[in-house]
Amino acid sequence: MQRTLTLAFVLAVVLGTALRLWLGRRQSQAVQAHRAQVPEPFTGQVTLAEHQKAADYTSARVRLGSLEIVLDALIVLALTLGGVIARLDAAWRGLGLGELALGTAVVASVLLLTALIGLPFSLWRTFRLEAAFGFNRTTLSLYVTDRFKGLALALIIGGPLLVGALALMRWGGRWWWVALWIVWLAVSVTLAWAWPAFIAPLFNRFSPLTDPHLKAGIEALVERCGFTSKGVFVVDGSRRSAHGNAYFTGVGRNKRIVFFDTLLEHLEPPEIEAVLAHELGHFHLKHVRARLAVSAAAALIGLAILAYLARRPWFYAGLGIPVPSAHAALMLFVIATPAFTYFLTPLGAAWSRRHERAADDFAAQRASAAKLAAALVKLYRDNSTTLTPDPIHSAFYDSHPPALSRIARLRALAASAVAIG
Image 1: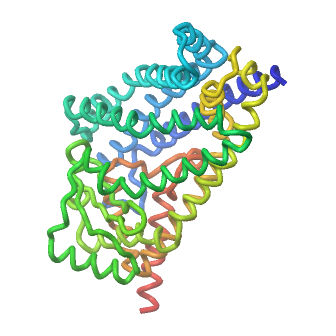
Image 2: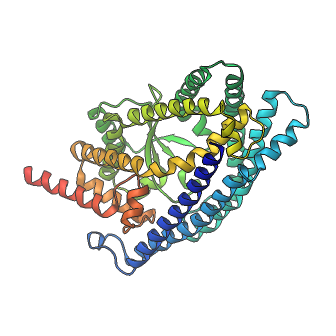
Image 3: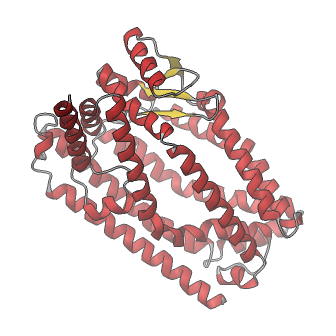
C-alpha cells in the first residue's frame, strides 16, 4: 500500500502540473490569437488598445503563474518525498519538546518556509506585473504592513485552532474528527460574522455611502429583494489596486453591502444597482448557504478520511515521513489532498457558473439586464479581463460565464423584456 500511495501521489502531482501548464498555454494562445480585433459585441465599447492590453495582461499572468505551478509542484515533492518535513520534525524533536509544542513548531516551520519561498512571486506580481499594466497602487510600506497584520491574525486565530486540532487528534478519542469538525464549523461561522465589522477594517477603511440619489435607489432595491443589512459601505480599494468590484459579506444581522470606490468611479447609478441586484441574487437564491453547506460537508468527509489515514503507517511512509504523529498526519493530508482534488475543479467551476447565470436572471428581473450588461462591459474593460478566453481553460477554471456568452445572454433578456413591455 505504501508503494501504491507513493506512485499515485507522484502521478497526481506530475499530471496535475502538466495539465495546469497545458491549460495556461492554451489560454495565452487563445487571447493572443484574437488580440488584433475587438469581438463584435464589444465594438465601440472596448477600444482595440484596451482589448490588446487585456490580452497582454492575461498572457503575463499566465507566464508568472506557470513558474509558480512548477515551483509549487517541486515544493510539494520536496516537503514530502524529499524529506524536508521529516528533517524539520527530527530537528525539533532533538530539543525534547512536548507533543503539542513539537507539532506546533513543525507546522509553523513549514508554513514559514513556504511563505518565504512564495514571497518573491507576491512581490513581483504586485510591484512589477500589476504595476506594468497600471493596476498596482500599493506602496511598499502598505504591503509590509498588510503582511504583518496578516501574520498577526494567523497567530491569534490560527495558532489556537492548530493547537486545539493537534490536541483533539492526539487525545480526543476515536471520534476526534467529529469534534474537530464542530470546532472548525463554529470558528468559520464566527469569522464570517466578525469579518465585516472587526477584521476587514484592520486592512481597509469602510465609509457609509453618501450619495443620496444612489443610496435611495440602492435602499429601494434592497427592500424589493427582501435583504437586510447593517448598511451600504464604500471601501477604499483604490489604496491597493485600480481593480473594481462589489460584494456583500457577513452572516445573520451583521451583513454589509460593499462597493469598491474604484467601481463607483466608472459606473452610473442604474448600473451600480444592477450589479448589486446580481450580488443580492446570490443571497436570495441561497447560493451562499448552499456553498457553505457543501464546504461543511466536504470538511467533514475530509476529516473522516484523515482520521482513517492517521491510523495507517503506510500513509506516513508512502509520503516520506518515518515517524507517525498527529502533526505529520495533518500536514501530509493538507499538502497531498490538493494533488488529487485538483481534477475535480471543473465540477466546482460549472456549479459556480450556474449560480452566476441564475443571479444574472435575478438581476434582470429586479433591476435591468441591459444595465447589468453595460456594467459588466465596463468592468471587463477596466479590469483588463480577456473577452476571448480559451473554451477549455474557461470550462475548467472559470467561476463566471465567458464574457461573450454572458453579455449576449443579458442582451437577449433585455430585448425580451422590451418586447414583452
